[in-house]
Image 1 (cartoon, rainbow, N blue to C red):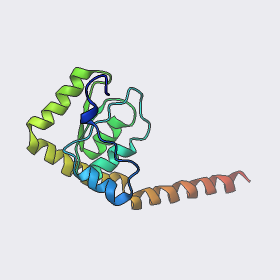
Image 2: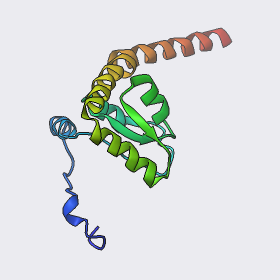
Image 3: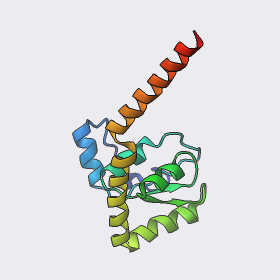
Image 4: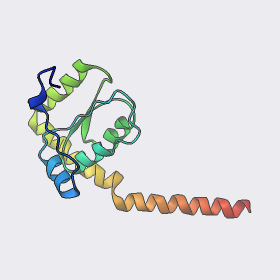
Length: 137
């Protein structure tokens, strides 16, 4: 970062507890973590959206499914600086749209990725496995 002259643009916040993490997320106007690989989980995207932060993510890995289900962000072409810049700029220019994506994302996370739903799915999966085990013995 120093060589590029960007050292003043970044601030390491260390390991954050839940309260400070939520405070940090709520301070963002948007989140984008444009990884080069196909991120399989995207937990950080769900955390941002749960706090009404719209996201701009590459169209690969878990992101297309997450954003389609929640409506909390926009997808850009992977490995394209131009596409990423256009996505971020579009939300910067249209704050009302960014706010709407934030609201939709928070609602979508509650509907599709909430703790109660995850617990219900885990119980269903374990019950199915138990039935399969009993049926084969």
